[in-house]
Image (cartoon, rainbow, N blue to C red):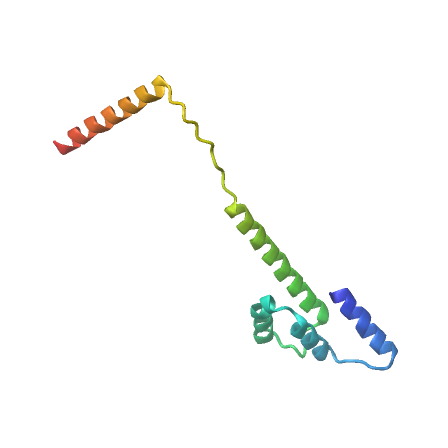
Length: 114
């Protein structure tokens, strides 16, 4: 986006129309999508737009874009889950293990009750 914007501004300069830096910064902030509104408001409130260089604005916006992409990647990774396939076969050792587990838990319960 910035390279297209720069090309347009340079073409306008060649035609004799130039804009002050403050107006260029405002034009870029105004054209950003709605998802960027919180960042635009933060820049407007935190920085003096009349003295903010275009390059610094670009750096700030690129940093924000990278952060947003990283958060999206983290959310996608969190949504992935591992599912195990259950088998219906039960072996005798599983049943013996279950009985032993229940027996030990019952003994602990009786011991704690006393």
